Length: 622
View 1 (cartoon, rainbow, N blue to C red):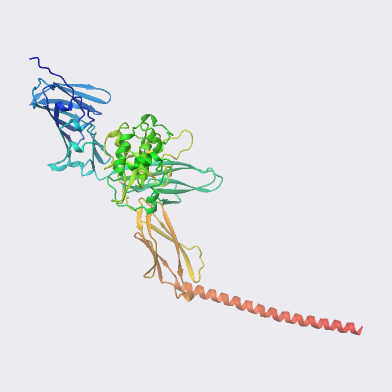
View 2 (view 1 turned 120 degrees about the vertical axis):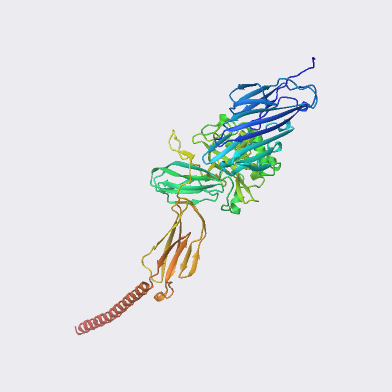
């Protein structure tokens, strides 16, 4: 009658939340089956089927508390064997506690109780632009469960999955739905699933530039480039640049001409298409990869502490895990002009990190292991700054690293900052929210990112990014222009060729060919020509004497464009004949003048000699 009954409280953050369990693990075994059924509207019906089994006779379950972190559950219900149970709700700033009281206890070893808790949640699935995303935080205490199974059900209308992390144990289709199944071992990180082929952002970027010198000069800025995970569509760059070129890291450097003391506001508009998986892209050179393993001011690979630590972390995944588990994001440091600690100081102050520290430490440890790594500065779309923080204040920018995967021959972006703050795996799959502005490999600080080009003490917002749609014009065709530095030619003709890309996208693998009649006499290889960029080259058309060496037709082709340059052989022959005739006349005149000059000189000498003789005779007579 007076058998001791101890009430215990199980704090459970189900797989949709962080989880804590306050009971003796050895006294109970807990089996959980959590189903998340996402509707086309984004509303999610969550059903948790939980079985508690007594492992001893000393502790008995009288109540059960479910702690839901970060969500706002609605229509909460609990059942046991078809009978409705009472649910008590307590809500604070960061969580909701749901306590279910059982009507009785079940004494005895091996006795089990199975019950169901259901609720609706509006924040687990969100549509961002063209992409549906489902985000469920990690299971905090997987060791507290004997078994834990998760079933995620989504409508087929969401489209194919763009990314999923971790990989599901099983994927199947049932009617108009797609089912993803996970086990406890998969849940060390949260679930993150994106549906859709790609994400599109539209953007406007302002760059405030000033020539502070008294001389005419050129100034450069970096605009967002194509990468393996993004494709750029440029609508306009105002004013028009002199040229755009790609640096060794892959940045697009845009050149403008400035008069003395001139100020300009450069406005860049366009769209970016973000991919979930790296696409085939230009391969970096071996010298670039080597450059991306070197030590720098904030990537101190030769520091003894970093060097020794790197020896224990052999792979990028081990480095990522160490960084996410060691550093703690410090929201108090998110201020304008925040100091960049670098890897060494980040290790000494692990609880005071922002995105640059997570990035710098990852890069330093990777480079110390000989793994090429670099920093990306850019924009990241975040709906919850506490879970997905942004560390660059004035224009809501972010930093994350990339490492070179030699087996896949591509740069792989990861985000240890968001991996640490959200618990989601941002190593195996990055989301569709990261938009790269600049790449820092050769230099940890330059080129400067959009949002950094400001004038005055009261800088305004210069980065504007929103969800968009792909523009109607999505291809480029190059233009070819020929000019002749010297109008006059005799035995050869100089030709200057300018190949321009008027936009909106970059063109790749151009091989301009110069053809004399049907013979290719010259070709170049242009790996990339960014939008609004141009490439210049020159060549000579040979003519020879009487245009015997001149081709009948000269053509230049590149990337589906072609122009023809007539050689005008007859004109060349006439020009040569006239030129030769003119030269012959000049020679004749010169010869005639010379001969005439000699004859006149002889006459003058004779006259002078006669005169001298007359004077001599007169003198003798006198």
